[in-house]
Image (cartoon, rainbow, N blue to C red; front, side, top):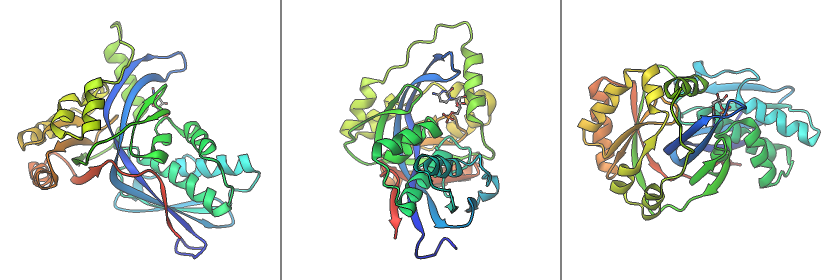
Length: 305
Ligand code: C5P
């Protein structure tokens, strides 16, 4: 059965940027408590689920070669978890059309997990409740619940406990994709190393940031953006400093590392400024590619049939 089969279900899932990522000290379980303000952005992966004899994964897109096609892929794990809970066999072919940077700090892997979950639920008619889907997402990874819900949300705990946030307008971004990826656990380990012996405060959402999201004012959001993982990402990937500087010089309202990186995010005043900024970033030679996108974006959505 091919992804274009009439019985196939396709789900579109957005990438994310963290407009605030406040990180607490390492917990006993190795995870970190967070105040993680997620904003979904309009760069999407599409996950198609089609009947098959066994669980298989294929992937297309410029960076498809970097995507694992075995059971470590969150899309495969999502299908297995849903199937196990509902007593069915995960007989499904999952096809990922990948547009979100791989290992880039934009939750591309999490997006594929949430997308596969929703697609398999529709394909198998399991009729899982929203609550059950969110539970499975949290089991898959800290960022996966947000990929399902999209929009804007505050994530607490390890980032999986979500409170939806209001946004008052459209924000315009440029994402500079680096040559290479960063491992999220490695970035958190570097955070632990850099903060060793210091008093790491409990993470809290910034009222100024939440206000800026509510009013939709890009200039106010620019002043409030923060990412506690940025020093760790820069320490492991020093060339990102040049990308951040190039975007700032080219007129970005603000520049920061997206999540655990190495994608860097630049806030622009409007769509036209974002296009100019993307050209300048590409011309600077400090990134592999530059993508323009708007936020907020909707969460995982069935788009076919
Ligand atoms: O939850 P997820 O599997 O996406 O996390 C990947 C890794 O990132 C974890 O194994 C952990 O090393 C780190 N992490 C963390 N604290 C969080 C989220 C992730 O230390 N809140």
